[in-house]
Image (tube, rainbow, N blue to C red; front, side, top):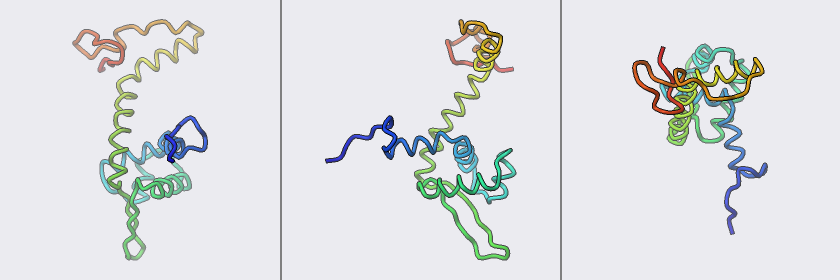
Length: 146
């Protein structure tokens, strides 16, 4: 009888997948490859501060998980391109939602960090931090453009 996945159990395969997609390099690679197929060095140039070793390890892990396809072309020197698999595209779509959340809420997060660093209570973040330009606040979570 199959047991129901339990991401809170360290031995659960679901937890291992969550660990992978919780990795900042994996997230950035997924976002970049959702846009287009790229060669290793192009990925390295576009993702600032990722080391060659970390990029290589992360790509191998994503390939092993069935999220990234590695295609080798017999050229001199050899050409290797990376793209998302169909499974990888489903995850990249989900990750885009997290990216949008981060971009939308960065003002509120930065304000909370400033308050924390000054030793202030977390209290409510001013509505101006959340409201889109020229519109009244739509409720928590809407960042003002600017």
